[in-house]
Length: 442
Image 1: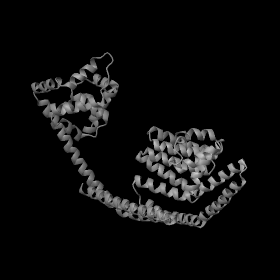
Image 2: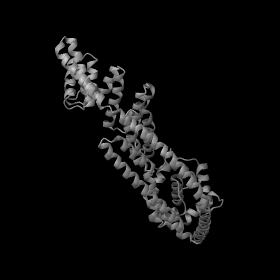
Image 3: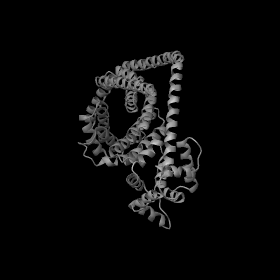
Image 4: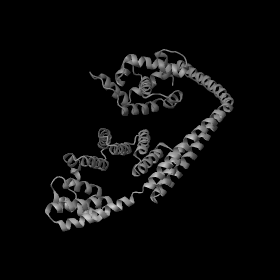
């Protein structure tokens, strides 16, 4: 037993060290990304992923890795990262982050011009956000869906999705939302409203937003015949276009792709080396493991024998108890509120099943009327919810047919569960009545 504990402690220590190492690499990646060094940030994220991080940290690692690759135009490599992030968040049952991951996957399919897959993932993310009633997340997903519809000139659908934000003051509106509003107004004949949005974007937006704002304002002025004013905006549009081209660093993208491919090869080589080491070590460890198994088996067998002896002793003591003592315990239990509640449930023409709260009260009552019963019973077996409730009702003196009614199970199911419990606890076949006798002996 001590060796088992030692092995467990060693494994726990190694796991903690790996998690700490993964956290260090991840924090280093965040600093590098903040400094604009995407290649090194990606390298640190890959190192963090190799350290077998926890599911929560793995979700963040793969999500950030996917965003770096996606932003650099490497959508093909970003997709599996977003999918790994979704898998990790699924293990955590984190619905909000799962919805964000699905949006990321949808955006990858959008760049591939796969409209069906794109909207499939957007719709799933939207349903998740609505399910958890996260209004901010829902609004964000709807804005992304609106952007998709605007790109495909589906303005009415985009208007429906942007409707919650259309009444906001443009001066206080998020610039991304404001950009979509300008696009919508520009192409649905609301040029005056589009113009006010474009002026704000031209003043406060990023390079791409300012570029399109000047383009749209030039188009609106040309339509009104204001050629001189339109020319000024076109000049500014061309200047911003040149700036965007300068900001696109293709060399950095090539470096990231080369680094990504190189790191993948290194990971594959490291995996092969690990397999070789494991194969060599396995032979040396087999003898030790076999010895540990034999010792463990002998200890378990001795513990089992002691447990069975204890059970037999309990049954023997129960059979020797006086009838007067057993009746007195039954009378005490019969005067408790929960016993009266059970009686009322069974007296109804259509009996109702007991609730979780009812069973909690029954458990507390039995612990008071039969001190030590609950602890003793739990020490013998890892009960399922149904098995536990069945045993509590047996101790309360409820007949099997009434147990079936109170737990919404069939009488046959209750009978087979009792026999099965006896087999699990005593290690040999027994009848339902033998389990009932054991429960009463505690």
